[in-house]
Length: 206
Image (cartoon, rainbow, N blue to C red; front, side, top):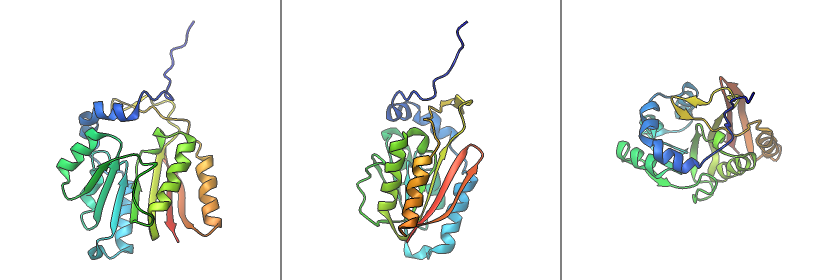
């Protein structure tokens, strides 16, 4: 007897996938994740919102969180041309570009706030490490980054009818890197926590 299994580690092509399902994805992605919303609200207590602090959504998708970052100089980057097209139409005040979150092209110490929701599960362990390095590189001194990704969803083949195609996520390499950065006094770890099926890293560059 052959057991029916779904290989969630198979990634056909993340960019192609989101270009194909962009409209459907955008219809479902219309609610703020409470943890991300709390982070953005928290940053508004840290920064003078009249000073146009620079905010970046890495893997911005359809630009959902730009609705609540209008006080900031908002930027976004995503691999999918389709999602950037949708986001540009919805939020013309945001500065958006198609690009790779592992090599963003932004300058060192450019952003005060960096948000990442649901990108990690599309990256290999080595890419996750490179992603953290890139995030810290572009984060300004005193700036904060919220980095999250799904885990423990091997029994969930689909979310809202979309493929999860999640890589094995133990985050051990990322955790080791972050701890090394903290020991070297490059960052401060605000917290690391697991919420539902996700892991969140909240860090501050010092």
